[in-house]
Amino acid sequence: MKHNPAFEALCEAARKNVTEISIADVKQQIDDGTLPLLLDVREESEWHKHHLPKAQYLGRGVLERDIETQVTDKSTPMILYCGGGYRSALAAESLQKMGYTAVLSMAGGFRGWLDANYPVVTE
Image (tube, rainbow, N blue to C red):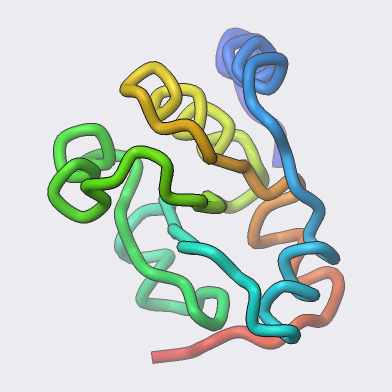
């Protein structure tokens, strides 16, 4: 998916400030039971269509508003993902600015997960 240049520049700048994790590493953590909190930050309609196993939903639009209610310990390890890795990088950077210290963004996002033929949950 092609995004607008200013959005892509914003995301690339965010990526420099966050740590990314590969799709394969996330899958391995699911398989071996070591997965930390996995947050889907896509739109609610995307979540309801399908999402990663073990994921919880906290959309990008309300993330900063609601995160402290859902995750009170700011050292909680968490992985964020979106459709392609852009919104999750922005979200991870935002959470870091809020004091969260163990936030990762899944590089490649949900589309990469699908491309790898990994399982999804359908509602």
